Amino acid sequence: MRKAEKTGNELFDVFWNAYPRKEGKPKSIRWFEKNKVDSETLEKILKELERQSKAKNWKRIDMKYIPMPLTWLNRRDWEVERSEPDNSNSDCSTGTQYGAFVL
Image (cartoon, rainbow, N blue to C red; front, top):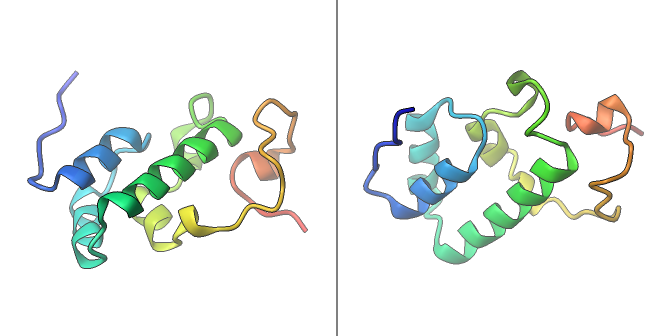
């Protein structure tokens, strides 16, 4: 297995190592630089990334159902307020498992 090459942006490297889908790295780096991500923001990103990956069971689903890193960053998914409790062990419907919001 190849090791991820360092980009010169340590904060981005931490994010990239944590994100499960490894596609679109150059555009994701540009997003980090454009938005001037600092260590506090990265901490929020990583915390929500971990919560979502557990809640949506990203380790066990097909990679195509995990959003591209740039999409996840552009949607600012780590800023979404969660009104529902974290039910990572609950049995959820297919729609919510893959990130769809069901009304």
